[in-house]
Image (cartoon, rainbow, N blue to C red; front, side, top):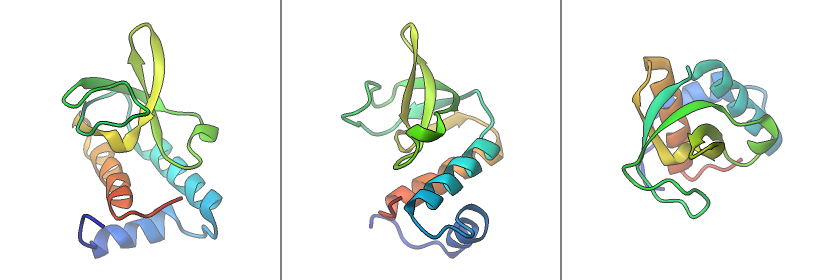
Length: 121
């Protein structure tokens, strides 16, 4: 695990996001609905890490325009961006909001915390 445990984030995840989640599928749905209800789209974001499954590059600025479909978010959370002449889903863990409201920044931070603590769905 690359970051220390933060009790306030753990509490929010337990009581607001994963409340009543008993398995990985329910956890994924908890995260999906939390992010769907909390993220305010569109928002600008910067890529801060390379992912082999994503064509965006470190330092690239993108505009997140929505959360990916529920069925695409069963093991990881994805957001949609405009990419070239299409809409592409990229991992939320790959980007950091740079022009987003406070709730969006907090929700993305919660997901980053989950991923960086090596928690899994």
